[in-house]
Image (cartoon, protein in one colour):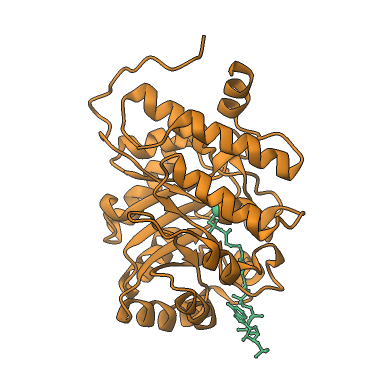
Length: 311
Ligand code: HMG
Ligand code: MG
């Protein structure tokens, strides 16, 4: 008999959640093996077939910094652009934006650091200098009619600097939103957040003028807290959650980062809570199992593991 959670609705929680799938970007940027571009294209098509509508496809970063995603333009040219599908991409600077526009993208993301050390390691910029890189990128993207997401990394802690003041992270996010970004994704790059800490950061964002309706959460599952943190965010009214099919992920410039919250683990919890999301869990598990075959190792997702045995 196949397993499904029993649905028990919690009236305190939102009725619908938008899943922002980051596996093809956050997942594959961290793989030591370079995945062939046709496999990446099939991965994205399968994720779309499973019902995901926002699929962060790749990054237009420096190809020497992230060789795994050097095929970004080639990948986008292969994607079937179906109605209602959104393929955001990462663009750290104007050069990345030029490449994204040339590839036909209409949704991009800049990614800032809440800490000095990670700004240097991930972007080759100081904390202040990163804004000089993002400002013209965001301004031009908005002027040309693109949507721009803002990420902030190391919001909940940094492996080199330790704890991060919630207001410091919120200030970085607010500055990006003031440039014209439409959504702020709070990144727990190394997975150290815990639920009340999530609330403290949301309060700090609110105090800086970034309300809950413009916030997304981006949890990595290094210490097994991603789902608990997500539930805490949902309780506060967040309705966009980043997740990665099969739990792929990490950041090549943050050694201790492991996979994102697995999309399957999120979907299982949302199903149990009666929150709609539009994803077919079986099809998604099939896709992650197929991708695990290409990567040569099983998915770390508990739900993928359980349902793969179940079928
Ligand atoms: P840089 O070396 O300082 O670049 O790198 P630069 O501005 O000095 O330019 C040097 C050369 O690179 C120039 O070429 C540029 O044209 C070229 P030259 O004139 O010497 O021939 N260049 C580019 N080429 C192609 N595409 C570009 C590009 N930019 C410059 N976009 C840079 C600065 C930001 C580019 C570099 O540090 C970089 O690419 N970093 C990206 C690192 C990255 O992708 N990290 C992972 C994503 S972040 C993440 O995973 C966290 C997240 O998931 C949230 C969370 O979990 O917290 C989002
Ligand atoms: Mg990430």
